[in-house]
Image (tube, rainbow, N blue to C red; front, side):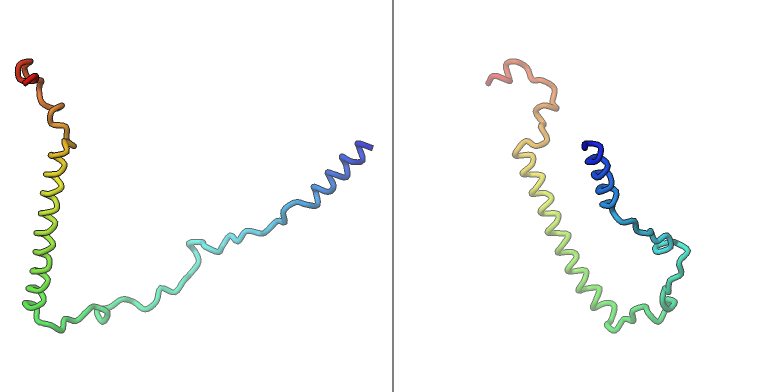
Length: 103
């Protein structure tokens, strides 16, 4: 009876296998041809329609403002880091004398 159960269980499991699918070997192969589109020429390059000096002065003032704000933020962050002793300057210095440490 147990042998019959074991054989029927094996037959049941044999029929419950996952179905086999064929793998597509050529789906993403590097030999597959594809259409890259039209060739890139100078017709696709942008054509300026404003005077150079006007655009340069607008952008330069904007980028100068960015530079000023970022430098102020950098100095502020370093000042806060030094005030919070992030860089541990006391540990990097040579030890002080006993008299100066206990004042």
